[in-house]
Length: 270
Image 1: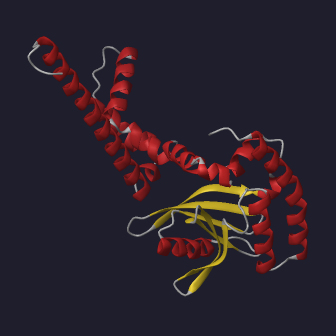
Image 2: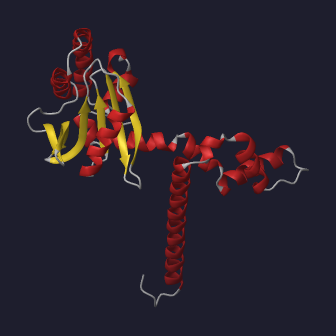
Image 3: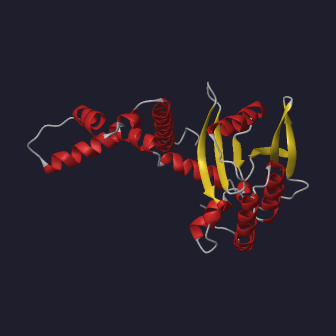
């Protein structure tokens, strides 16, 4: 993750110290949704660096209904924010409501929060539209002296957004997901490495990659990791990346051969 600028770091530390007691008091009073929205707007400004008047929009209209807040950068809609009362537990139905709003606007990112819990989701515009939890923060437990905690809330800062750190974090999280690793273990290059290492340990035993793959699928990898939509999506991404790498490699090979031929024949212009 990109390093946090010093001024932003100081703002995050001060914001955590300021708003943790404010949130605790609001929860003790069991304030309603409207008052929670007011606190969220202040937090988005004081902690996350959004300008209240140019970057935040209240009750963003979507097909006859409203999302509580939205963020805009350079007048371009970036995220939708659904706020629930601070004493209300966040539920799946709240996520669905926010995701429906975002899907109608073609927005990839959604924040669901009650002030204490901050959950960031990324939409996948497939059929049907899906969503994935990327960041889950309990603001009441954040430690202003923890570098990891500061990096976590920096993901949602305006400065972090402008540097695409949230997208990079999501990409890294995907690459380290059990579905992605499970799919990677099934690829021929990885299976070939395993086969080579097994033969080095047991040189007299004949082992092929299909045998290794069978053991992985049936005895090593959990079924939930290799089956279902997320597993299939991971396999497709790996296949696409592999094909892209092969095309790039072939293109370089052709270019080198062309340059070599041109060098050998001075009548051919380089």
